[in-house]
Picture 1 (cartoon, rainbow, N blue to C red):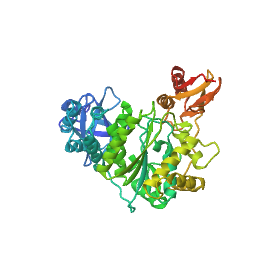
Picture 2 (picture 1 turned 60 degrees about the horizontal axis):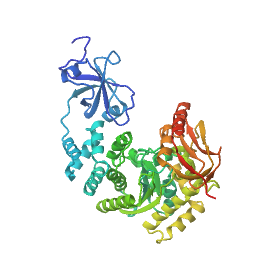
Picture 3 (picture 1 turned 120 degrees about the horizontal axis):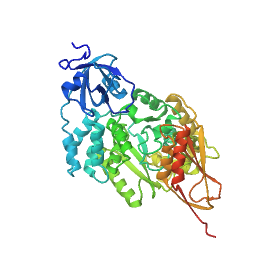
Picture 4 (picture 1 turned 45 degrees about the vertical axis):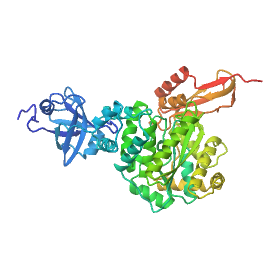
Length: 509
């Protein structure tokens, strides 16, 4: 054996090394360009490589290393590849070209306008979950299905396929409620309040929530600043059995696993298309064992849903897919003209939630009112309250303190409650003119929060001091940017200085 090349082409094996490189869910393998396996197999950068070790097999994307950073006889793995393969340091693994992924031909057909059959959709989703799709393949699938390119039949197929490849929960109750917002509205963190009110009224509400896709915070991100959300399926069951509800990250319990993979690439592409949105939401509801779901659909010029017509179309698609998958769905069209609450970002939104549940004097009224409306809808769809009486029942539950006690108990059952942190670096945006604040740009406000570090930095984001309809004076703070580092604060404030976030007009006498 050549001492400079301890791995020969005939053997086709390399020793595995854990490099500690976080590539999120993308599986990556690192090899020297001049190692025997690369030379014998003809592997080049971005090749898809099948890795087998210890009875397990994964597919990974090759990153080629030049120089002495990696030895000839070693192959490095990203953290995601290491975990999925169940690898051990120094373990020998074999490397080969994978079989062609047949379902990609259906994706190519979709790119050129051909419809996806039930069988094709199932094969695509199965291959995605098995890790057979590289990021470029995932991007092609997501892009091909974007806009109006998924029919209702294809959306139903996608929803069923996403449920089929993951776990599906069942509960001892015949009626299990849920609530979901389609997104696009910063600060709209109603779910914790709704879950607390529903559970306090004896309903079963095992809420599985997503992390942010294109927003500064998802429900799971905000809830994580208050209590653990990465619960196992067994831990989730224990919380629900004890308290009647929970708020956990859906990815941790392996419900609709294809959704988490697609979300990662959707986030990078900044794409959240209608058909995939419906499939994402309803597949997780079906997988979580829900039977009755209330949907919050904010409508506004800078929200995700821009008009009443678009909202009606989306609602109709939700209803059609829900019927096909055995769900009862009720849609609530809500105001999407401006953010809800004062905070935008995980910890700031969580602080608003606590203020509402604790009934603090300065609790944001809009968040309180919207949460009560949605909670009332949940009570009505579950027949706990008669039609038209749910709001009053939800209000009584909040004002009696029952909702706060139930929420605190849920947090304790999930691993213990904590107070959300405040960011160490803050800077206000000051009004330069006097007048009526007539409009707020949801997308730009969300962008500021993301530039400040949210959701990766939990305490980063934007705190609002004014609302549409307020009269502002010169020198008055309009918002404050929160960041965990001075660099991110400067980055966000540079954007603030170059973009109009609020529209201020002269007041008429």
